[in-house]
Amino acid sequence: MKSKAVITRLLTAMCASTLLLGVSVRAAEYPTKPIEVIVPFAAGGGTDLVTRAFADAAKKYLPKSIGVVNKTGGGGAVGFSEIVMARPDGYKIGTGTVEIAMLPHMGLVQFSADDFAPIARLNAEPSAISVNVSAPWNTYEEFITYAKANPGKVRIGNSGTGAIWHLAAEALAEKTGAKFNHIPYDGANPAVTALLGNHIEAVTVSPAEVVAHVTAGKVKILAVMADQRLPAFDKVPTLKEKGVDLSIQTWRGIVVPKKTPQDVQDVLRAAAKKTAEDPAFKEQLAKMNLTHAYLDAAAFKAAIDKDNVFFKTMMTKLGIAK
Image (cartoon, rainbow, N blue to C red):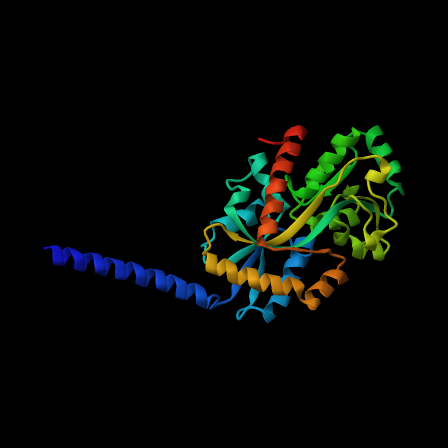
């Protein structure tokens, strides 16, 4: 009987070892089929552009291609929720943005920032106050003076309720006493399109998301919400120069569901590092006036944790946290 029990335990241990070995082998072979990356915002916006540049450059460092799929809605909530609920096998990954540290505090989603495992940060951009070139304001002072004198008349488009550009405008209102009419869209690009059509008066998206229209003489940037002036927009003042202590930025990076096997995460992290350092990737971001801001997984996780606390505090102060 004892001998039979020993044999049973040995067989059980062998089965468990075989199962673990199978998982390890599968992870070591990853990826064996194309990878899908979910972009929670509309095509043409900064998040979409960064992701497509990454997917294109990553072809050199992964044996399978990365396909980009836009899943919009809810200020990123729809796309982020799909990433969190995806099978944690590395074949459906996502582009994480600062909204994963914001939306949960508004009670708009069922996930938290801790439900994502960071792979690498790729980019970071500040908010900018931009208006149609035909708008009567040529300076930040003229714009904010009008907004304060006409509560609710200035419509500011954003990339969705609870998204970073919405919070940027809310924070501007809180800092200055102005009252804006916030108009949500399924991404920065639709908001900018509305601005071009004079359906709204301003947007608080990143400079990169309006630069083509600035160059074309259709949009003007009045100020940026950054600590220092941006090299590509060195004539545009910061809000801090104008006496408004406000600095708001978004970031974009690759994330996966938290339970994704470590071996798979390691493959993605190694490929992401090589891709982020690739001259072609950096050059593509530069062409789009997007800032290269790579962080490895550990540093990215620390940045997410810091923002999670920061935005919870800010949103509570603004009265929009749940």
